[in-house]
Amino acid sequence: MSDTHFQICVLPGDGIGTEVTAAALTVLEAAISRVGHVALNFGTHAAGAGVYRETGVAMPDESWRAAEDADAIFLGLFLVYRWHCFLLENLMKTLNPKP
Image (cartoon, rainbow, N blue to C red; front, side, top):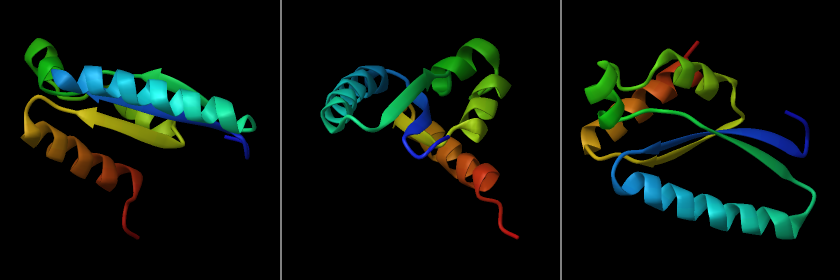
């Protein structure tokens, strides 16, 4: 990260989450383009109930590593609310460990 370049880990989620996230990122990119001196690099990664059904894990290791390495996480909506809570709670524990 520099003062003007930021890596954003996008976890769009499931169901309507992917649609809402896509629309929100479009708005965010338009706003950033007007500011002009900030660059956001978005990397989209898998997480959620759909991923769990396919692979047996709600958030693959690659997605965890991307979240850990990012300057920020853009967390979308998940089909099953408990997955949203699970991922958010575990991201907070992982990325902000208490001393």
